[in-house]
Length: 376
Image (tube, rainbow, N blue to C red; front, side):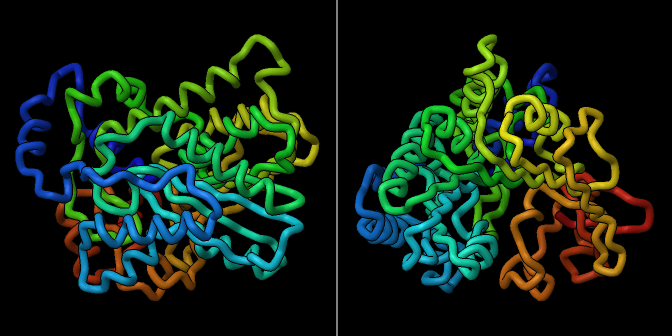
């Protein structure tokens, strides 16, 4: 889930004071990037090979390309599979809001090298242009997730599922309704956001279709995401919290192994709530919460493993929402990449230093430390 756009807006904007004029001005400046297309995204398509063929055809025909290497952009946004020769153990991963399957490339490569079979999918509204997020819904995403879990379950003996951010919400909800899931693997699960204003998204998606519009310069995800996308995310939160808070213990708990990787200073996710629900709602003895930070959560579960992310030799101040996914050797997000996400809420002067190639540190959005220029 790339919720950065919405939460930067939420942090800067007070709905109580009203921002209709600002949002209307943004909406009036939209180009084709911010208009919904009329083509139908391929869903409920089997076998997986046919699904890949149709998705590629759809992206090629409907993507608003941001660079000259169109083939590379298509590849980055395509769902993919590795370890196809293995039918023993499979892992299905679902990406987050505004993101793409590329976010799982490093994880999939590592797991397939160890003999697993890893598969990803592309959620409706993604991979083409931000405008295609204007027509999405939580129900679409949940149905797509359920369909691909069922499809993959017929091809492997043992099935694990999981995801990043919103994808973790969707796959957890799927697991509640199946008895054949061997375990969950979650990265930055977005069970609850840090911002109260996100709860309003399902009610204002038609009033404020574009909470924040930014230049599209990242081939792996959207920088701008339409409010219906945020509403769909929030509805996944609502559905999940309804399960987690059910009065019937048998309905609010999942007895499957689970691994969660959570950045303590995640700017998007309410990590304390995630830690509490890891402790209370996931009841299998084989579970682990990898907490990337310096201070253990107040509701510290027994199955907690701490990982310090103050790494001065690598100029890392803290882990971010996205950082659990990528290796330092990643071609786009790794240490040798020229691409930088410089908007970190620190002001135009520091953002300019980052864009000019100045000396920077790495951390989550909004992270500030005296004497350091931090990028996401």
